[in-house]
Image (cartoon, rainbow, N blue to C red; front, side, top):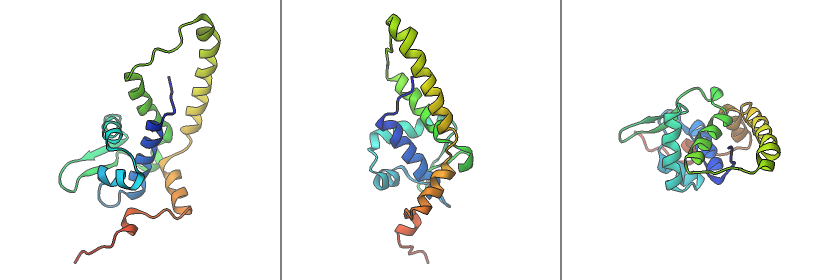
Length: 149
């Protein structure tokens, strides 16, 4: 069952942050937590699931972090929501069991979920990055002075 939880919104923010800031180096998880205010305990679990799902790529080492596994125009908000929804299902959800719930409520909810996911599949990380640029959201490389010699 699809749930639009705080964890889902935080995951979308994290992937959008990586899409927006991952040039040329990977984005470190601690930078995402600082910029977005995402609790570390949520982030690590979600990031690993996104790596396993092929949305993100983990880069090891001292300059490591996360990058997108595909072009940002090929990653949708729906992709992220599906991954987090799978995590939420693993956490346990008993769902409806009554005749009214199974016969009437569940089919309506399932149709609404399909419609929502269809809509979320039309919004890409590229779209979110363009919106961030339009609203002049500062990028990580603009926020820090560069002391490279």
